[in-house]
Image 1 (cartoon, rainbow, N blue to C red):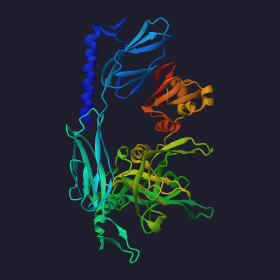
Image 2: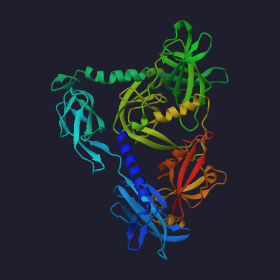
Image 3: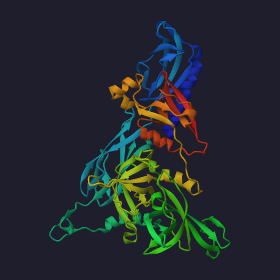
Image 4: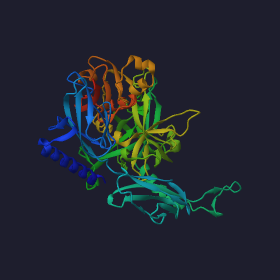
Length: 555
C-alpha cells in the first residue's frame, strides 16, 4: 500500500542530494557573516522527527544556528523537523564564534496513512457515523467510503454506516487522490437482543432470533482453527514404576511430513501414493510449562485416545516447546497470521482443552485488549525478574488446559499461542498469548533441537524518565539537557556484551536494534531476541559527551 509513497520519498531524497552536489560550489547565506560552500555531513529526518546535536566539537563548546527555522527548529542541541525540504546547520565555537562544522539536513514528508474512527458494533437499523483523516494533514483530506459486504451494512460518502443484517464486514476509507492509500476496520452488525426473564427466550421485536446467522459467522472460523488443535499430556514415573499425570494442555499442529515404508521422512506431498506411506509425522507447538518436568508425552484428539509423542526441544525463557508424533491418522495443519498486523479491539477466539478430556476442543470469543504487552518473569528461580516476555493481551476466556492452544482471528489464522492469564479476585479476563511471528522464529530453532541461549548485556541501568522525575536521582546521575528518554548506564560488567561493544558508564542508551528505549522491559525484550552463537549483529545507539555514538553487539 505504501510502496508508491516510499518510492516518491526516495526520489525526493535523491533529487535533494543531487542538488547538494550541484550547488557544492554555490553559496547559501545562513547569517550576515557566513556562507556555506560545502557541508561536512548530511542528516536525513522525517517531519516531526527529532535529533540531538553535539554540544562539543574537538573539545570546544559549541552552539548551533539554522538557516531556515520554518523547516527546522532548534532548542539548544535539540533539533526538530517541522516541514520538508533542505536546511543547513552550522556549529560555532561558543567563545570565538568560529564555524567548526557545517551540516545539511534533508527533511522528508511523513508516510501518509488513513486513520478511521467510529464504533465498530452497531445494531440492525442503527446508523453510526465514522470519520477518517489522512496524516500528515497537508495531504488532500477527501475520502471515498465503501463497504465490503453491502448486504450486511451500507455507507454513504459522509461516513454514515447503516446496519442491514446480522454479520461482520469491513468498511474502507480510501484517499480520493490515491486509491492505494486506504484503511479498513471490521464492524459487527447485531440484532437488538432483549432477554425475556419469563420464558428465557432471546427475542427481537417479539420474534425469536434465527441463530444460524451467527453460526455462519463464527462456525466455519472455529471449525478451521480446531482442526489443527490437539491435546498434550505429560507424565512422570513414580517410585512404583507407574505413570502419574503431571500436566495436561493443548497444542497446535503446524507441520506434517510423511514417513515412507522405506523409513525415510519426506515433506508432505499430496501426490505420494498412499501405498508408499507408512505414517504421517506431525510437529506441534505447545507450552514449555506443560512438558518441562515430564518424562513421558502423549497427544490426544478425542475421548481418551492417546498417541505417544517425542519432545524435540523447549525454550527456557519463552514458554514454548516442540514435539512430534507419528500416526496413520490425517490431521490438518494450522494457518498462521501476521501478529504484527493485529489491532486493539479486533475479535479473537481462544481454542483449547480446559481440564483435559472433560472439555476437549473448547472455543471462547473476545477482543484484542492490547496487541503488545511486556510481562516480567523470573526464569532462573532467584525471585528476581530477569526476563520480559512479549505477549498479546486479550479477554477471551482461558482456563487450565487452554495452555498451548491457539488464539485465532476471524480468518481462522493462528495469531498467538495462549500461555497464561492473571488470576486474582480483583482481576478478570486478562489472558496472554505469545505472538505468532515470535512463535515461528523460535519454533524454527526448537525443531532442529536447538535450545536458544540469550545473552545478558551486563549493564546496570536507570530509566532517564525516572531520573528526571526524582531530584535525588538527578543529584547523583547527570542527564544532559534535551535528553528525555533512554536508559542511563550506571555500571558496566567486564566481559559482558555491553562491555565488548564499547558501552561505558555514564552513556545513555537511546536505541537498541532500531527500537527507541524508554523502559527497562523494552530493553530486556529486545536483548531477548538475540540468540547466542547466531552471529547476529545488532546496532545500539548511546548518547555520550553530546554526541550520538553507534555501537555494535555481536552474538
